[in-house]
Image (tube, rainbow, N blue to C red):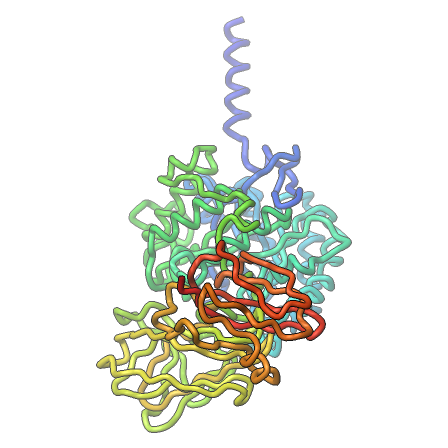
Length: 588
């Protein structure tokens, strides 16, 4: 009897020891926003992405490395980037993950996949066939790593410049690949990249792929880049609208993959996404010698890494995976729950205009994002004082250099603000023009004593149309341009911008004269002069939240409601004559 009990206990112990994420949770699927397991229960994937499978870092694509992530780090997923659609490499990694009992994301690691659709169809079709043949349930398919430019080259996968890849292009590409997967794997989760380095989940949410199940969308971020912080709202909007998002790549570093590792910014991000319950893979398993790499130089390609083989990034992410995947709470990794109440999206707090990823409006434009340029080069530096690793500099101190960008999602025609950070050896002017001269202006900068000392400044800029504009920034001399950002004016910046009470900041374009004469605001106690043809006046905070709306049809004057607090706002008139906007400051 005692022997029987002992054997039963050993059998139970053996079963527990052999339990893996795959054996416990089986085929994953999507239920609204959530990834759910075979029992329909929410299941969060937390794991590691390998590096590009070239440059020598494919040395880590080994069974030992995968098992170390699964067993020592507690990861339940790995992501395998396949840049050249190497089927044998992808299948080997799929087998390694199966052996380790964890899930795997097979990623076409391209910035130009839409120009190689036929090869992608063949690749993913064959991978799905292999999954069927092996009776696997642990494979997720990532169709497009980070879409970038519409006119990129499929041959060299280069950053060719031009317009950013539109969501319509990405969607059409995905819709051509999905049937090839579904022919053999009707249930596997398929993950679709989104515009602008896979930051454009809002563009996808506005026009999702239909007629298919288990389709998720990609969000990428780098936690130590301040400009990526607003992407947290994209995650919350997705959650609150049952729109499935998976973070297939994030780094502790700045967006270059290098630069600072700001722990407080990472903690803020992780508290947010863990409170919401988003699946993620961290970048990256490599010893590249950059901030986001998890391993130090010389780490074994076969895994078995000690803490001495881990970078600060590796230690931080291993701690997250090991504890959170073991079912421990946020406090076990030094985090606290974030406020992710959906009511925040209904006016309970201010947030930035939605970043849909089709362009760069409202966010910092880095050196690597310019659309076109002349006599300028992108420089990477580790010099102290440069916030972002990539910046533009003039190739020749005696001639002009320029870089052009596309701004999209402009809420309305009107005055906005640009913020620039430059380093220069002498005084000079940063000049800018919008839509080939519709707006031309300049701002003076003073010498910073060298290119590695970065100084920031603000200026007003007129954008002539709602929607899309092209902006050209030019400079002369030995100048480094680190950030050029066009933003909605913030009331905290009003003094720097020179926005004064009584100043007529009006819409530009054909209606400029009429509007400046008839639509003005001087102070809280003054009135709006409403021109004929408009029916409604709406006020928005500078971060996009509507705070006031009133019927103005047939009225000559409208007094501003006392509930509107002082600060800088955007006013929008709408009606039969269309929509007009102005920006103004409430001073009392």
